Length: 468
Image (cartoon, rainbow, N blue to C red; front, side, top):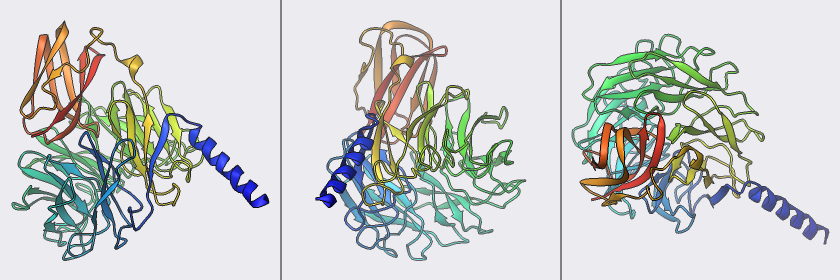
């Protein structure tokens, strides 16, 4: 009886903690062999399923690819990584062109230095596109790929001429590999951990170390490998050190986070112009009160930047937070708490305009990570043009172009299109009238978000899906 009573109290405690924040929902607990374990990367959504990878677990305990619906149902393991044949230990995230998912593994492949691969959304058609080999083409890639119509772009943490990382591109079919840059340390950085960001002309990125102070750099380079410019040397307390994730853009500034540095050496949030000017540290992380070690890429949604921290918060298990792009109005939204909600979110958050979705590296029922969602609202930040201003794009989904017919007349409005990582992928300015046409151009299939502004005011937001 005493044992039953103890278990009953434990159940009540767990239940109350889980229900204590009605906005947070744990969708899935990773178990190990059957489902994977320790997801270091992030989720990708095609509008129906979310796709991701785990670093461990699966039949061979070296990682999996999976999909799951946003309500936590219909989990399916799409692939067990097997080592030499298809890679192992993925640390990044997937992207899609609508037909294939593309990704990287940190190790495995013919040289045990990682691979580039593609696989269909139903788990069929796996193809290894490249075996990393060290000096010639890099080794141990970490950050996600990005894509345009012709190429996939990425970075490796090691390998290249100096064995401290490379930037590369490769065609979607695995041909046309080209090493764009060998990192060299002080002059341009070393050990990149993140993905690149493209504005159509330059690729922007960060390195974890290297630069003048060996604390990391921000750089830009053209997609053909020319025009490299080091935009910033991180320096510790004054501006942060060791950035682990990627930059995002709002069309005017680049935003990012460093895992360390700042006043308490627990990380920072910053912004900087694409030409390297006007650097501003927006926040110093401080541990319990606001989190520490932000490994996550930021997400720009409406008026706020959203993100997570790997540690810190009330339980030192990580946090979800938001902050305005000028550094004001910081708010800690959620404290992670090991078994009840997961622990140590490593990847970035994605959004469907109602929920933030993400994963934790550990914690959950089996202590091997979870998938979660967090409900948030920007309703006070959005002022609609009329009573029925949303969902006015037609067709949607679309393959070539879609048109917005507004209820009211626009005057010098700006339309910004974001992907799920909060990166600006398209911007239209000086819009007037009632009809706006948005062309696909080279954007890959997937879910996107439209923010329509007049001046500094967000008027309305819409969700768009691009598909063939």
